Amino acid sequence: MENVVHRQADEVAFGDTDASGWMHFPNIFRYVEAAEHAFLRDRGVLVFDRASGGWPRVKVSCDYQKPLQCGDRIEVRLAITRVGNSSVTWDFEVANAAGETAAFGSMTTVRVDHQGHPQAISAAERAALC
Image (tube, rainbow, N blue to C red; front, side, top):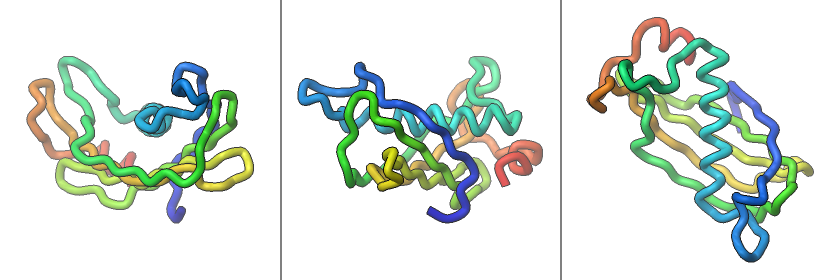
C-alpha cells in the first residue's frame, strides 16, 4: 500500500473470533478503527465529543484474503487517499505476521457536528491530516 500515514501492531483477541476460531468478518473494522483513532489522537485531531461531534463512517468496503485466528499478530496500515470539504477517504490493509495481506479496503468518514450534520474540515484538522 502506498502513502501509509499510520501503522499499528495488534493481536487478534479471542472475543473477535467465531465458533470456528477464525476472526469474524466485521471485526476487522474494530482494528482499523482503533488505528484510525490512534492516528487522529497522535495528530491532535478530535475523535469524538458529544458537544463537538466526530467522524462517523458513511461508506466501508473490505476484501478478505487470508483468515486470521485468535492470537495472530497483525499490523494495520492506513493511508489517506482523499480529503474533501467534510470527508476523508482512507485505504487500509491488515497484514499477518508474515507480512501477507489478510484484508484490505477503504472507508469514508465525514466530519460532523454534535447533531450529526456535516461540517467543513477545519484548517487545523486539514493540516494534521495532510
